[in-house]
Length: 141
Image (tube, rainbow, N blue to C red; front, side):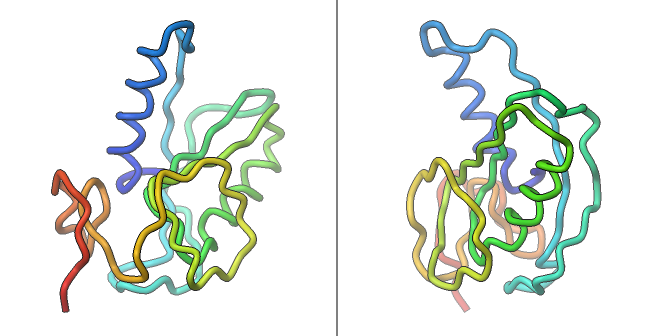
């Protein structure tokens, strides 16, 4: 996914490529989905703003998310990509916020559990601001 997951995707790809015997060819593609709009809470309505350019049929696919909160966006994307018949579909997230989960999205790899608060930095934003912070912080109100 693009914008929020950009930072974690770049670091993940760098790490995978430096591990001895790691994959020598990784294709990175982006899909842009929105369920927040200009709000700090998900509307629950997932909209695709940009689709993948690559064909995922028969490929090993890892969805990289910045944060999973309600799970609606990830659940929607998993169903969307499964319909394209990848050989393998896994998902990872930097931050998991399981407190208000409304969908049964599967998360295979979790970096850490986030607090039950709105967080920004390291790719996470609020109305396109704070994404560039080199750390994760709770947004104060």
